[in-house]
Length: 368
Ligand code: PHE
Image (tube, rainbow, N blue to C red):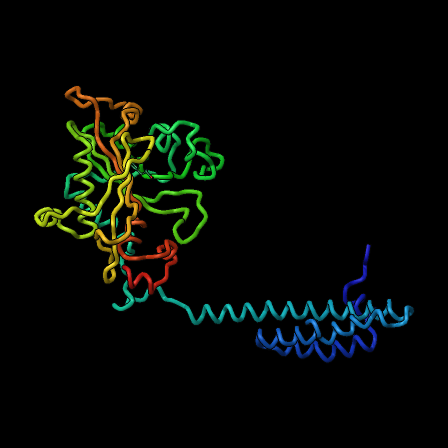
């Protein structure tokens, strides 16, 4: 066991050269009050062509009998000065941090000045607009948990165990809670609403959904969806088509009746698609072009996918224990799902999904 203190060992190893170095550089380091200055000292001492580095580099040229002691001495000096540099660096960093805290101190108890008042986030704004729109058309709002079960997220929605979306690379499962996960879509709310409220039903649900995606300009692990569902006797795909055309005309501020009078069609296409919980399934694309600050529906723009929808699969009703209406006719209806960020990005020309979550006040002031 080594019972000598570092200081004892150091003083034994250090001769006149080491002492001179310590006397020259030690006080300089101690006197520094600025991080940039401290770094200049570090470079001058132990940088690539620093004084101490040079001396260490010369060691192999010394006669063998002197080399060992000189090496020990220089390395001890280096150890002492490096420790000093890092101690002072920590001290200066903490002073700098305290200064920043003092400068940026915000008294949250002060009354707010009008020009500093916050604005509603673009996503909240669009969610509120959509809620109002659907409520005025007789839809009820359903809210449900973000941590949900495999049954509500997959099995109930006719997505069998081998379905790719259930793989861990897409779905975030909760550790130590078997069968629990972060919902990958708001379609979970179809299952919850049908099984708790029965039929007929007309509802929407807006909320966060989660996918195991790496963050880039078009993906974030958390985003928002609105789910809509209508199950009433006599509901057909034609109702779904009208409902969604009307929604798009609301979102893009076009008047369907005026367009019809002018003999124009809304530039929308219904493309066959596949979702396990709807049959037939459809994806809707809009043809959009940019005008001023907002996106406009127009035939000479580019086609963009905007939402997924379809007629609710009979198995979904069966899984919720609602196979028929009160009059005995089989359960039928349609459902749709839309990404809120997607609408916001299309409508307001937001090019990077990360902006929604940056919390940048200038962005919020502009878009809020
Ligand atoms: N849940 C689907 C998705 O996340 C969207 C959808 C909802 C499609 C309802 C059809 C019906 O992509």
